[in-house]
Length: 79
Image (cartoon, rainbow, N blue to C red; front, side, top):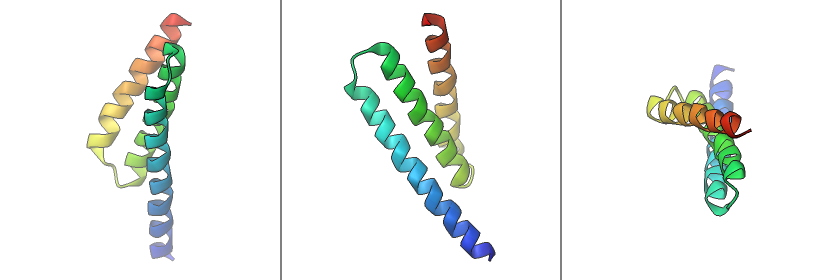
C-alpha cells in the first residue's frame, strides 16, 4: 500500500511540474504586465508544489517561493 501512495505522489508531482512549465512559458507570451505577473505567479506556485511533492527540492522551492512573494507584492502595489 505504501509503494502505491509514493507512486501516485510522484505522478501527481509530474503533473504539477508540467503545469508549472506551461504557465511560466505562457507568461512570456503575454504583453499586459498585470497578466504576466498573475500567470507567472500561478506557474511559480505550481513549481513550489512540485518541489514539495518531489521530496522537498529546495533549489526549486526557494526561488519560486521568493518569486511568488515578489509577484504578489507587485500585483497588490499596482492594484
